Image (cartoon, rainbow, N blue to C red):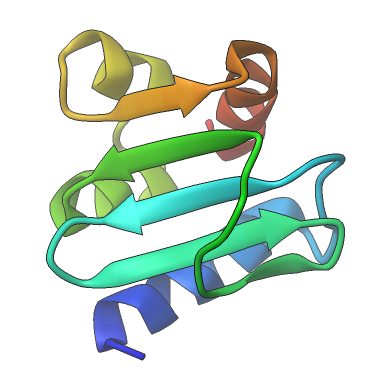
Length: 96
């Protein structure tokens, strides 16, 4: 696992407060790898997901540290979303 993915997994689990989500989301970090979030929390990996987010490492870092709103990242084209937009919006409120 790359250091970037490991840091993202840690940051996302902190944002989730030890909880998982209802459904499955995949976060693709361009050039680094992917992580899956489900009822068990975040971990490195990829697979079938209800929604998939794709961005570069800097964008995710800014989202997870709170300096970039996920909705703003999406609207500016820095974050792409494929799949269930309802789940995407729910996760965005958790990450904000």
